[in-house]
Amino acid sequence: MTRTEPTRTEQQLFATAAVTTFKLNGQFLAVAEELAKPAGITVAWWQVLGAVLHEPLPVAGIAREMGITRQSVQRVADLLVDKGFAEYRPNPAHRRAKLVAITEAGHDAVRRIDPQHAAMAKRLTAQLGKEKLARIVDALTDLSAALEALEGDATDAA
Image 1 (cartoon, rainbow, N blue to C red):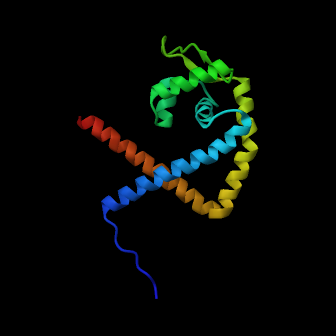
Image 2 (cartoon, rainbow, N blue to C red):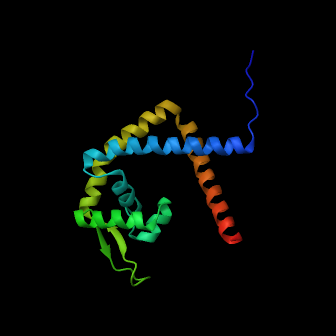
Image 3 (tube, rainbow, N blue to C red):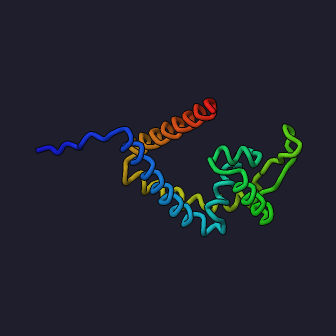
């Protein structure tokens, strides 16, 4: 005998997606905290360093990429610069909005995380399978893009 799942309303689906995402965020932050700790950095520091790993960005650009406030990124960027993990550089596109760039010490910290990061990725892939994990990543990316589009619609309507 097969068990049928009751039909969920749009509102129930939305609520479940939100609650699950909040829980998932907490789970990812806990894992990331454990990964970052041996490198002597926090999750917030790792996030900002990751945002500028390949190219310097202004604080506002990092905030947009991460989906958090500019002020939060500014506080972390100032700490990273103070600790020598990042530096401010002139921004040719904007005189006042300096670029945040990772330093060699920042690269070293991120590199120290890589082995544990790779091991965790391997464990998660073993748990779910690579194809299922790829589908989940695609679904989360689609969900984020849809919410971003709705934010844009709301801003345009205001």
